[in-house]
Amino acid sequence: MLKIARDRFQGCLVGSVIGDCLGAPFEMQNWNENGIPRQKILSVINPKELADKYIQLKYTDDTAMAKSVCSSLLQCKEFDAVDLAKRFTEEYFKEPDRGYGSNIVFIFEQWKNAMKTELNFKNVLYPSTSQFDGKGSYGNGAAMRVSCIALFTLSLEDCIDLAKKASILTHSNKNGYNGAILQALSVRKAIRATCDIDPIVFVDELIDEMKHVESFSGEVKRNTESLYDWTRSQSFSFTHQLEIIKKLLIANNTESKENDVKLVNSVLGRDISAQQAVPAALYSFLRNLKFGFEETLYYAISLGGDTDTIAAMCGAIAGSYYGLKSIPHSWFDVCEFSREMQQFADDFFELHKS
Ligand code: 8NA
Ligand code: MG
Ligand code: MG
Ligand code: MG
Image (cartoon, rainbow, N blue to C red; front, top):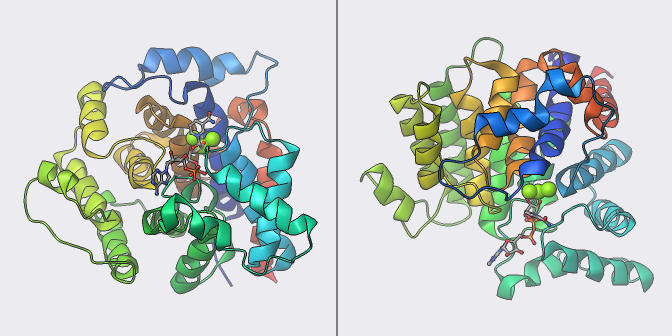
C-alpha cells in the first residue's frame, strides 16, 4: 500500500489547474528578459483581493488534456491509447478555444475522421509520428498533462513507461516525451518526499534517472565546459538542463529575483517547447523551497513566456510537496475546475487503498 497523504494527491492536481488558470492571463505577454514584475502579477492574482471578487479564471488546454488523462486512467484502470485519443478529441471539439498549440489540433482532426469512419484507430500513433516531417512535436503539450501519472503508478519503471505512452500519442519527438517523463518523475519525487527536500539531492537523483531514460533515446553527451557552452550545445538533453539547474541552485541567487529571472531566462528559457518549459517549472519549485507554494507560483509566472504551462507544471510539483492545505482558498475558489481536479485526486488516492 502506498503511504502518501491524500492532501498531497489533492495538492498535485489542484496545484496544476490553479497554475494553469492563474498563469493564463500572463501567457506570452512579456518577453522582456526580466520577465513579469511581481507587482503586475499581484495586481491580477493576489489571493487576498481575489477573495472579494466573484470572478472565474478559466483553465486552458493544459487542464483540458490533463482531465482526459485522469479520466481515462481512472475509468480503464490501465493505460489505453485509443480511449485516451478519443477523450482528447472529444474534449477538443467540445471546446476548441482553450488555447491549444497550433499543430496538435491537426492530430485531433485526423482522430475525429478515424472515429467517424470507425476504422477503430488501426494506427493511433500515425498522426503524431507524421508531424514535422516525421520528427514529431517537441511542444510542452505532453509534459503539461502527465502529472497524474505519478499518482496512478507505483514503480519508477511504470511511471516512466506510462508517461512516455501518454505523451507519444501527440508528441513523438524525443524531447516532447522525455520532457513529460521528467515532469512525471519530478512530481513522483516531490509527492514521496518524507522530509525537507534538499534541492541538490533532488536534482542529482533526477540526473541519474534521466540519464537512464535518455540513454534509450539518443546519445547523451556530457560537456564539462561552462554553463553557457552547455546551452549552446547542439545535442540537447534534459540531463544537461538538470546540470544547469544544479549550477543555478548552487549559485543560489535567491536574494535578487530580478537578476535571477534574467539569468534563468537566458540559460533555461521559458517558451512553448518541452526543452525550455519543463526545466523552468522544475527550477521554479526547487529555487523557492524556502518560500512555500504561493511564492513558488509567483516566481514561475514571473519568468514570462508560456506562463500557464510553466505554472501548471510547477504547481503540480509544488502542490505534491506542500499539499492542498498550502494553496490559498481564494485561488481554489476562483479557478475553474479546481473542485473536479480535487475529486480526480481523491479517486487516484482511493485506487491505492484497495
Ligand atoms: P504543438 O504540438 O502544436 O506544439 C506547439 C508548437 O511548437 C508548434 O505549433 C510548433 O510551432 C512548435 N513545434 C513543436 N514541435 C516542433 C518541431 N519538431 N519542429 C518545429 N516546431 C515545432 O502544441 P502543444 O500541445 O505542445 O502546446 C504547446 C504550447 O502551445 C502549450 O503551452 C499550449 O498552451 C500552446 N499555446 C497556445 C497559445 C494560444 O494562445 N493558443 C499560446 C501559447 C501556447
Ligand atoms: Mg494552455
Ligand atoms: Mg501554455
Ligand atoms: Mg499551455
